[in-house]
Amino acid sequence: MIDPATLDVTIVDGYVDEPAHFGVPPYISTYPRYTAGAIVDAGVPREQITYHTIDALRDEPRRRQDIETADLFVYIGGMTVPGSYVGGTPAEPEEVRRMAWTAKGTTLVGGPVRFGVGTQNEGAMDTERNDLDYDFVAKGDIEAAAYDLVANGLEGFGNRIRDIDEVTRWAALGAFIVESHPNHPEYLIAELETGRGCPYRCSFCTEPLYGNPSFRPPETVVSEVEALAERGVRNFRLGRQADILAYGGDGERPNPDALRSLYEGIRAVVPDSELGTLHLDNMNPITIVKWPEKAREGIRIIAEHNTAGDTAAFGLESADPVVQAENDLNVSADECFRAVKILNEEGGWRPGEDPNDAPTHGADSNNRLPKLLPGINLLHGLKGEREETYEHNLQFLRRVYDEGLMLRRVNVRQVMAFDGTDMSDTGAQIAREHKQRFKQYKRTVREEIDNPMLKRVSPVGTRLPDVHLEYHKDGKTFGRQLGTYPLLVAVPGEHDLGRTIDVAITDHGYRSVSGVPHPLDLNSASMDELTAIPGLGQRRAGTIVVDRPHSSTDDVAGSLDVELEAFATVDQSGAAD
Image (tube, rainbow, N blue to C red; front, side, top):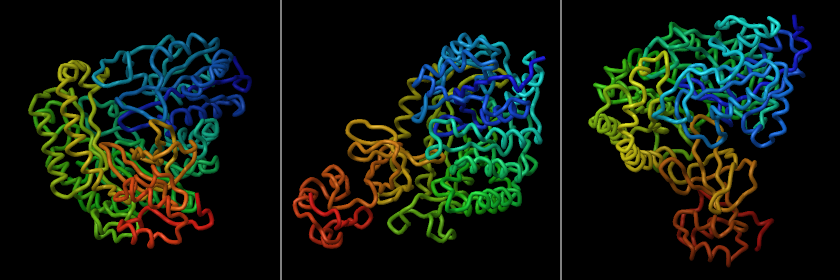
């Protein structure tokens, strides 16, 4: 029998993206943290556990030696929804196989990869079950498999689901691996699990494969947040659940008391002065429609305690009644519209405003993102999809916009088909057949809905605090805030990467915005930064540069007849060029 205290273990995070779980940087999912905690609980010393992301392996191939020499190599990954990613690139199946070939010790693979593997991580894709040449595949929870495998001397395990007591221990014990993440500490957001499973059985979704809803008590989630905060994490997302409003209840009905305990508990262990982000992900619109008053109370609790710019993803999936019926979708277009309206009324206010004024937008609204808005998920390639499906979806989105409501974002994707779901028989054939129509329709959504909606949600002059600068392109620097579906921001010039700056929005694209550092010093700003300010242009910007130093923004604004208050300041200490 192998003594766990003698084992060297390497964990590689290939990233995950599920309907109710996200782990592509700057996110770190629960899986590698819980798995590390389980291995420690089984008797392996913490210092003998090595954690790498797949991107870290690509950047420094020498790290692969840790895979080769490990007594136990654990790979965690899997994408069950298609997406495009900026912060990291999920592992492709061939990379995952090569790691198994590299390892000389025992190999274990798990996470959503167990549901199936496609040839690529994209939509309109059929998948198949595949062990990817690993010794063991965790068909239950990867963390439970890792615990049992180590406890059994690497000789095997029974596929099982971990219990609440185990996940409570493992979540705290495994918090240490965040310190090995390349984004730690400033640009890392920890995905938090409040519960798993779903009472509904939509045809395409893998979340029901986790069973009926089960929830972690608030104090167990709070203790995990505290352990992560002690390791330097300041950004959190309650993303691992199918419906945050149903947290702590029967899986369907809202439970405001449980939400209050959860959010107040998190705020107690991470005070305002230390908290960077507190966001969520999934909220089921049918919950809001069935229990509107309880849902309103729950939404008010969330909006009181979260940080601005939060997004509740609504899984409408299709506004076409034919598609809804054939795929067991649980919310109609009219019901989803009512849920959008209620969430706008309770969460669509901005910091510094009276919540009773929500939803707020236009010239009189404060210059911050709203507290909590809905996002809409639309999925194509489902059973029953037809030409009229695309028009039904567009009509729904147009109705939301025309009624003066706000959506933080619209996700338009194509289905991936997995064994165990009702879509496994249909596969991705419909999505492939409709691919050209899908592209045209997606362009229409971007032009008719995304751009004007983005202007409503984040008008010119909106301030985005703590934008992390990520990469350079075409003479600009691109960055994002930490949070759920953050805006991609382009800033003129090539600024030092890795920095965090405040930005004031100056213009809008379809899914991104342009801005300038806030506040912009008129005595040192570049021509590109000055001309980005609405109303300035090359001539006025040139006048500002020539006439430096300036003593006040009011004098400049008055002489040039342009509004500068939302963007600029004057620093007389660094005056002239």
